[in-house]
Image (cartoon, rainbow, N blue to C red; front, top):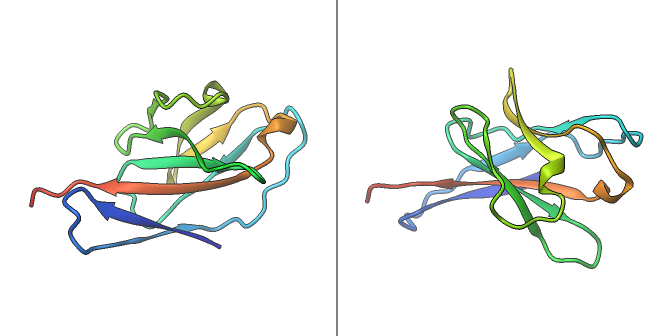
Length: 115
């Protein structure tokens, strides 16, 4: 189970656990796959990819209101990923899986504070 932490913009000492339920997702090349991240549906999500012997790389941001994506982080595979609206909120989706998508995926969020 991957747990990520929400950090507030004003560095107020508050944190929230984000829950990623699926430990392993297996798909054949060409199939689609979606990753969920629950616990803080009222916040934008940031998705990261982690491959063996490589650092974490941010893929994109998914905006909470409409599940649209901000892909301005320079990830080489950014166009393979989209935001998808489901009953569980906004999920990260790969429409056509490639061998090179094999990795661990983590979500985090950023909570903006007026303080």
